[in-house]
Image 1 (cartoon, rainbow, N blue to C red):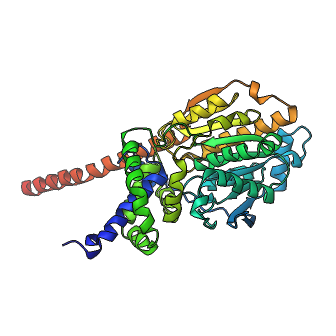
Image 2 (image 1 turned 90 degrees about the vertical axis):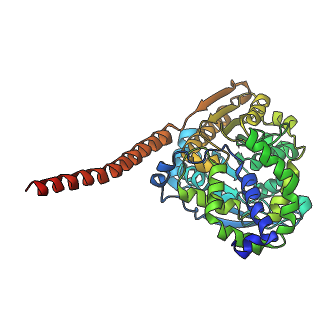
Image 3 (image 1 turned 90 degrees about the horizontal axis):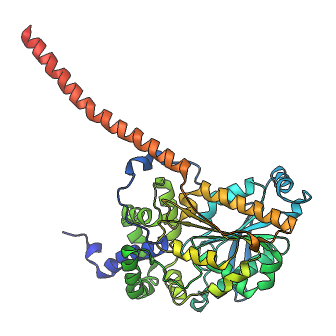
Length: 429
């Protein structure tokens, strides 16, 4: 007999909402159940911890929403080395501030690897939680639109990066936020932004989650049933919390399968799930509508003066490479990096590779500013790359796991043979 909570129709709807919310938030990546399972446990790492920021702030927007902001500062030695390496006169003041903006249903916690790498390399890093996400306050449901997010980013910049050069990094909806900023504040973009990274994002003009049958089905279900489920469920958050606790293993499985396209440690899956499914349901529901009809392609030309990196996973079917192609086509000199075996939450799946390309972008942008190089005259570059270091590590771990399985399989047979031999020997005696 089924437990009473399973038979409860309200709870059954809640359980369905968990799957819908997880699929939408994680990007509905390719179905790869069971792939590389042997290596996952061995990939476990102890270095996935939230960054302790040097500063924490609250920025109040003009419509009264309190935005949570964190700042990471480099050491004097690291900043001096970065300035010596990239600026014309070695002045730390000439280094850009790097601003990281997260995507839909994520929070600033998703940038944990990037924050450490960028600060260690000598750069001041500003991260923030978009309204309704992480530790930022909710706004009115009517404010859950991309244009409003551009204004929020401007408020963060005015408060904590009011002068000096900027490198803006946006993932998914965070990239859309950066585009909205460029549309609304073109002078800021032209005068201060030297580099931009669009990570797994879209300028619009294509349907989101258009990367295949699984994405299409999930998107259809979300469009038809998402608001109907999430709206009433958002008024009963305890039910959602109870379902999450009861179905923890299922939740982790969904997030793992739908967020990544290569093996990641279990701790990374859990960390990602806590961020994704910690987003309030009314916020998830409110932002869904903002993606309908979204199209900012005409704005992209305003980024032509900056050094631009477009970085995405080849298996990302929320914002597949075709979305990134639109950005590259509109911005002369843009560099497009497509990563094999990578899904939507790529900053947690392939952190070292993204860190490497972000640091290269910042250095190129800083040098171009110092030497007055026309970035629009640079050739467009598109490269498909593989995270070779991770691929080798995974393959080695798989081989070790296979050898361990074989050795365990042999042991019982060898013991059986040995026992049979002893039996024959004793009979012969």
